Length: 132
Image (tube, rainbow, N blue to C red; front, side):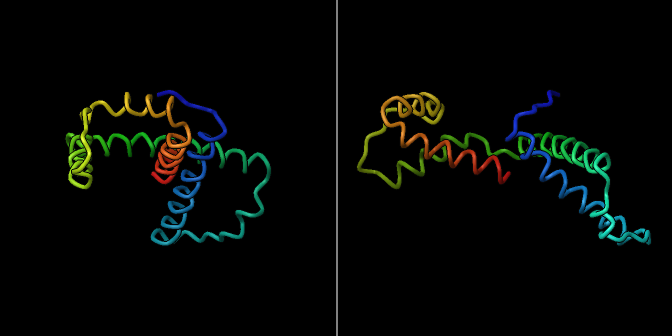
């Protein structure tokens, strides 16, 4: 397992990981009878805050790997072909000379011919990854 440390990757793993940690702490305090005051989180020292951030990053990284594995188990088969068929039905007056497996080639062609269109596609993909 590789650990990536880009600024986007850091926040994409640390923020959800921090939320998972806070949820775990809340559930632990709710069901185990441990007295926990969330106001004490505001009094953490710098070292404790850094440790929390690093642990949150690692939790986010592990949960992401589990989510990818989970998605691969239940991933719809031949999704590209199904999406293309739906698109063909919607725009039946157009002629398509490509198949579902040709999407990377189509994106590369659009990148060269219509960069503003592909920037929109990449923006939607980035939002999808962030919300995942």
